[in-house]
Length: 218
Image (cartoon, rainbow, N blue to C red; front, side, top):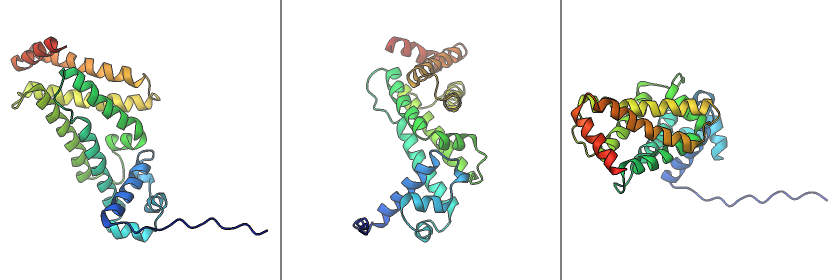
């Protein structure tokens, strides 16, 4: 008996926006676990179940344009990690934001490493600007939660240093096969936030007021 071919799935024409999202999701799925310079347009087409010419139709600039679009999509998701409702104690809010951030890192491990470490053949000043935009957005969210509209240079530097430390700790965590457990890493990063603010508070009155408020808010 000749085996019957599997039925062809019903085809539904996607809208322009739906197709674009489909291609970006396919690219992000690949970039999450492989360095960007190891992902080809053929890989993206196969992941999305479409032809290579269709990928070019939506991204005529080729891999560079697709990568930058995917990076912007990932950056938007990272920005949302720190978009926390202003309810409850500040450190509790920061803990929830870090939960989302570390979940993103966990789900996009190789791509996250390639993104922050650089060295990709598709890295440009535009991609660097996208990453820097995420850092600035995180700092702005934190300042907003601190109730600070005009941070002084010492406070601003401290918050930006902590964000850099979070990135570095995340990369080391990936290198160490995601050890210690993510909950322990999260709590340690929150403690580091208080610690660096406390050090700065010895030299800066603005930061000292914030630390006093944080202690009273715990």
